[in-house]
Length: 178
Image 1 (tube, rainbow, N blue to C red):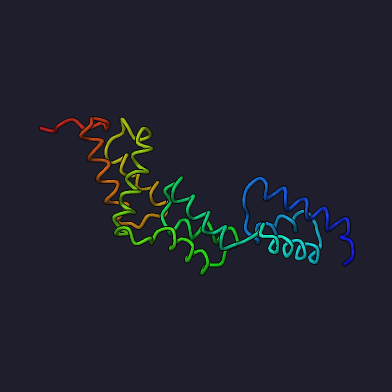
Image 2 (image 1 turned 90 degrees about the vertical axis):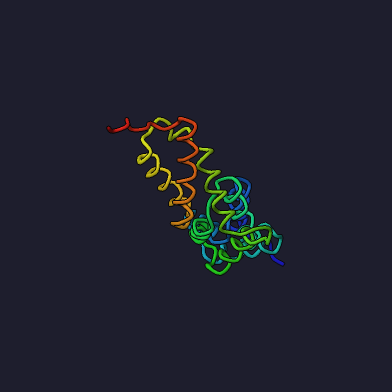
């Protein structure tokens, strides 16, 4: 076996540096190495070496990414799948990883999504205090929409949290009209 060229060594170091910062998909590494002006053959051989040693594994990356986005950001499946696809993960693999995170058989998936949406809103409730209920509703619904929650689940979560906040006196209530 011949010695790797200087370009091979530089691409290897660049890829390891990128992986040290955070896990990445194979496509993310390919794009980064392309932007760094490495040749196609060097990029592909570097990616092959990374796959062979287990440093790049798209299925494991997708599962880890999906689990973290669900746990840390409370993103819904649609948002997680979209984010995985934007990182170069195939639609089938993105769907499979997301399904694996959400379908553990422990409970009703819709009820869990509703609960997670409400938790997300409660955690950010300070941003909605002292607003009129309709303003709080609109902003909360926007947050859940961006997080990928389905329409009815988002509405139900927002309504429940608005009711809680109103009961706790955290929203500006309009004066009673007589």
